[in-house]
Figure 1: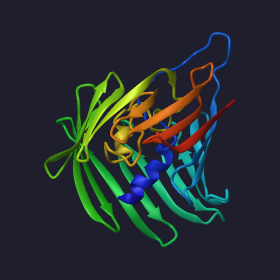
Figure 2: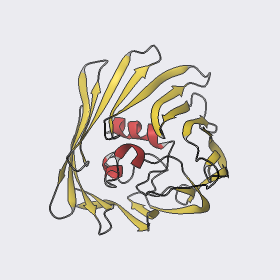
Figure 3: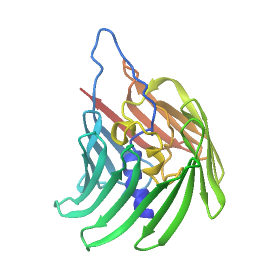
Figure 4: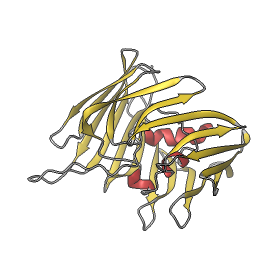
Length: 279
């Protein structure tokens, strides 16, 4: 399922996952809309991609990837249904050849029930994930990959409606603890991750913008509680530190408490710099 993790990481590299409805208002000025995020790899070595996300109505429209010489290498186009739910992500090479397509299907309660990726370049199904919702507040996941076979796992929903446990082969592989909507601690087979937040500041875009208000979709979109990204909060609050990786995020904030810039450090070294544009 590496392709799935990469696909989600492309989007999550830009955002803080969220199921909250926090908003920041100003009585004298119109709240600006996010239109672009530019994220540059700084300390990850040569060949690291430059990412640029374009937003319409506070939702991603196109995410572009460039090489170290600022040449476009590939891009992703996001499509939505009439309920403003994300239903398709199309991947293209720089020459506009259609490389892959990912389709997301929802049930009548707007819960994700299937995600499927088709390799259009070589005409085969790369992977699928199907979900079954059980009467005991659990969700069964069945995934099938062209390269790595099948996997079954179970997600457990807590009393607040959040998925807080992931179980594979009877073993708990990920668990989370929340304070309100903030992810405070995540325990995995690799170790314990502790999250700290800024006292002020709000991320202008959340997964709720594209996956709807059903908060379990945030986890189902990844098919894991531990995606290949450092950003795994269920709050619009800005993450300042992640202890396990020794990550620190520094921001500059505008008058609406939205970030203008973000610098990401790993073990004291800069790894990413991001700029946010509004209108």
